[in-house]
Length: 407
Ligand code: NIG
Ligand code: FE
Image (cartoon, rainbow, N blue to C red; front, side):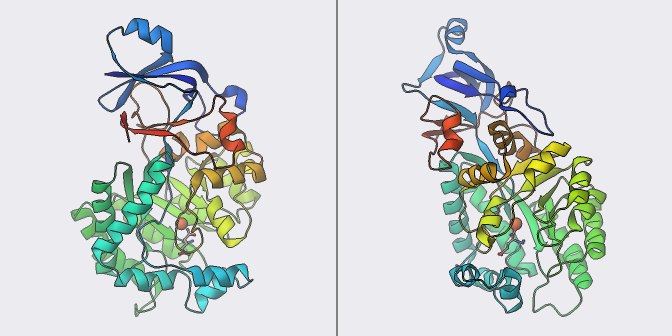
């Protein structure tokens, strides 16, 4: 057992709601706070001096400077297992060539597929570990990672094995998701539906057997998969015991309705969602995940986070870190930019980066600094929590703890 503190401020996020808008006045700001941790979890959190007198002989990790403590961030949507660069695509995009046009001309996702197929397992492990370590240093203690850049039986298994091995090597928790339904690979001879059936019959049983992932994702879009075939695919994946998430409403709508119908944990992207889809998201037990990194990378509109929150939806914010649409991978910077563009409160941003993101991953043991939650923590070298978004992502944590251990 160990007492960490004193902190100028601790934002426990203890009483913030799972859904809807949040005013900053609702934030629980504990001044001169301390946290008692044991066995990787939070035992209690409270006034530092009171804790000192309640636990007189406890081991202490003394914080000498003024710092603000937050729960570790959770990035609930990334594609950090990939090989090669798409700098060429990016240069074309900023010069004005549309993303979908580049994809149709053979660039885009398919370019990353070719490079990832050619990479060894070791190379993919190394790339994933390096990116996860960068994220961890930025205070991100749980990271979802999707497959979907190999799109063949062996290739997708290789990616998922690389994610599993990377999870063994890094301190952050990596949560794997099978995105074999990213696009239909060019070398698959058959329809979209036949490709999805191939995944269901040949890949997913193996993913289960080898315990490589318990989540399934699909890209519902004109250039990827249609609504009806996606619905049938997701329903069958769900029957096999997989949790569901969907790349929805990025360029055209339809995906979010499918996500709701199949009982997905989350619908992610939503840049094109109209009032109808926003209403639907607000009335579903599903997290709406905003991906400002993709909006920045593609130079397109942001997810309508303000409207979603005002209608009562649960909004998480994730990086979508990938070689194509979102190469930056700086979650806090992206969240800060989104908050300025969409007019989000600091409380809404921190909720979206923590317990609301945990809900999108279907985990309830992290995201707030309260008794029994994982002691995944991060401290910023400031005395006022508002400095964090004010510095728009430039300010990074000075200390990160994973399960109570300083890294
Ligand atoms: O989330 N939208 C589909 N998939 C990824 C991008 C993939 C890529 O361009 O490599 C995304 O933005
Ligand atoms: Fe994505």
